Image (cartoon, rainbow, N blue to C red):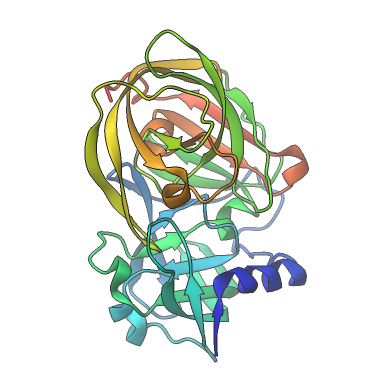
Length: 314
């Protein structure tokens, strides 16, 4: 039987969150450290799914459930799925959802951290075949820990929820949520250097872009001049076409960036999150060391501290 992954999300929510277990005892200031590398402005973690080789998985705030999605159908034979069901996995793009196999009893590990009874989804169609990464992971980390990304050291640290950085220079940015566990915040943008607009945005950490402007009826801002048509990428529902250009400035957490590279895409194709004016990705956030802390949505926060990449040109 085939069913939409949306209904699978509902079942997961009804059962409550899975509590990942760590090899490090609770109560320590830092639960565990995991190595990562930055490629194409994406945070890549080496994660073994079941008995697979270490897979290159992108850390993704858009993964609002415990589990992993594996893009490459050729990896299906190396990942043992218990009683898999056929599902449809929607995402960004202008086509139909991707077909996949799914189990809710998978396990995976990264360094000294491991979890069981997790959702494992392996695509069975070629939509994402040829991608330079093997898949995505998100809420299994972000939904249970305060997750610190130290870009200067290429280390991801898992802290207990409620962690507050002790050294100076960190800025606190409030996060909020709508109908899922994808983090939103507020920012300001000036696309042409004259009008300043307050925008609502969500964070797509799997995106290597800095700022993505969503086009839709009644949008708040004017589009910048000099846009060029472009194929922006491929999502779980197919290709994303739009434009590339630059905006005058963008401000997040009191930090302003000038002459920012931006892409422009139709809201109904790129975002599919109602009410989003903008999406920000790791092309912007890699300029900070970042702590995501939203295991408790009622006090969700993001901490930002400028790092060695802060003044890099876009």
